[in-house]
Amino acid sequence: MKKVSIIVLDFGSQYTQLIARRMREEKIYCEILPYHTKIDAIKAKNPQGIILSGGPSSVYNEDAYEVDQGVYDMGIPVLGICYGMQRIAVDFGGSVIRSDHHEYGKAELEIVKESALFDGVDNGTTVWMSHSDKVDELPEGFEPIAISANSPYAAIANIEKHVYAMQFHPEVNHSQEGYLMLRNFARKICGVTEKWEMGHFLKEQIQIIREKVGDGKVLCGLSGGVDSSVVAALLYEAIGDQLIPVFVDNGLLRKGEREQVEQVFKINLKVPLVTIDAVDSFLDKLKGVSDPETKRKIIGHTFIEEFEKEAKKHEGIKFLAQGTLYPDVIESISVNGPSEVIKSHHNVGGLPDWMDFELIEPLRELFKDEVRKMGLELGLPEGMINRHPFPGPGLAIRIMGDVNPADLDLLREADVILLDELKASGYYARTWQAFAVLLNVKSVGVMGDNRTYDNTVCVRVVEAVDGMTATFAHLPHDLLERISRRIINEVDGINRVVYDISSKPPATIEWE
Image (tube, rainbow, N blue to C red):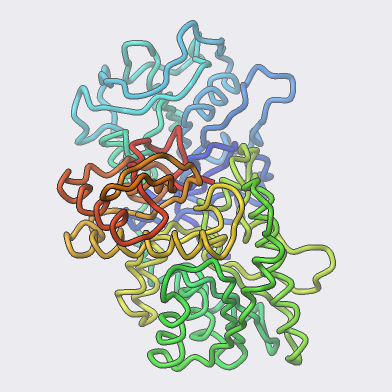
């Protein structure tokens, strides 16, 4: 088995995959395993270091999540983060209590003892705290190496045993030099020297796909977004004509989406794309449905039904490929650890019992920007790769309430004006995601000398690195004014435009 530089044992934190992501950014090969992985399976991967992630549980709960104690006897460095720190404290004989003050948000880190973990880190650097439990008594042999205003044990270490722990989350962007701390752990404490590139992941996935598929065929669903497009290109690179790429026009796409997808795959990449017109099927099933979770499930099930119909036209299809990314997974289900469900995604969670396809999700462990890098290596055009994320359920979750053809047309026209103005101003490339939301809230307006009573559109533009967290984009007022004026003047049925200034968290990027 191939050597893994760093293993992360996942206790269910929403940020666990960010740890692996930071390692990959530092060209360090890292894998995530469930917290309950047995020691023999861990040893088989021959890691140079172990990281215990954060998590939503408390170590003093009766059913607290525990790690195989053999991890501490492997003779390799261990780093605990948040819950991982509390786990280490208890496992080595210390104590953890409920804190009087829940510490959530930015904190100033004071380094009180020299440590390789903090080489090159500024004293007073900002870190991100998110905990209600805290270490009360240190285990024997441990000492504090950093403190904060509310954490006398913000970071601790047992140098002799090569065990380190942090109360804060170095993996999130809010921890300004957290990436450096993780790099120090891997490079300076664990002694990792190998360098891993995205190209390695691409080659590995191609080999994995070939071995898994054998002489079978793969049905791949394209939604029009970056993720499914990269999956289709990856599969075509791996298995050629064994791939049956299917693009379903569900009637929930952006303006001109179908034509763009067909151009890229049929003309640019020479991939034999199958296009299915399923507009009536989707819209009939969505008629009268306003609950967002129900919308998502209907859309997901209908996608699968359309794929099954197409599959029956071909011999030897054994697999269904999807463009699931890790942010989709951690917002939907517990993957390796007991993470909390935020919302379901139409392409996450496996296949219905009545389907006999095996699922292939080669991007399941990646973030959006990493997928874009892979897409460029596969030869996809930059214009497609750098498109803003577009959700699988499409415009259905950008319409509050019932989904119908009239509202879809209204939203498409508003959305294309927004995107055109952002591209013309240069802000499209500088932001993570931008879209319009039809609120289905009517208000009084005046156009000319006439009273209007029309709909409201909300404009949502955010800045992000990976979509796990996001802040609203501080667009120039003249740009916002131009967007608003054009939408109101050019789209009949809209007389008011508002701008969403919430961040993620507490809001999500999409409205539904």
